[in-house]
Image (cartoon, rainbow, N blue to C red; front, side, top):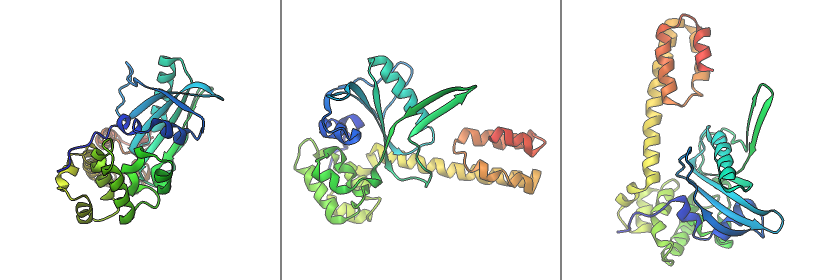
Length: 282
């Protein structure tokens, strides 16, 4: 039976860091110097890798790699904060990259964080790479071993033949063979679990030990709780305010934070007007 894989972002990127940094920056002559400590006193990160690199044109700089299972609305602010902390700690300019693994809603993913308070502006640009838009052939031609476990969800990778090819590459390399679990996990998004089990030839219980599997499970549970709150809020609005209250539901559906939804649900009991409730929702 396969063993649970070390699928940390640092582990994946360290497989072939030179090709990785060339790919994420599109700077052909960039060279890896060192994978740095990415822990900061004020910010705890689990899905990032900080790399010091150098190129003839840009000199020394940092690459901030942030890998997300799915894009989250708070990411622009986090990219700004983490980039600033990295630049402050290492006294080098930074090139931030946000890599999104699975496609979520059809919401457009921004490439810039901006804020404007009393005329004072803050801006942070960052590169966005959505893996579902990356051609699967890029992984084999470059090569990019860090992306081989993600082959099934890459563009053109939802193919049994290609998945088997990726599996052969993983099994032929001692550094890569523990990543079968990751490949299997993402294969279940595009082909039947029974076929994945046949291809991998091991107990699918191993797959359930994957941290990403657990994150998907938690995400599903949270989605279920949100749906319950949406239903409860909608009913309360209709009972107390009628149609004007229901007009707030499109705004409320944009709120995904469970705690905020609970606050709104409780506020309906005490507030007297729709306008007061809208202030809380905005």
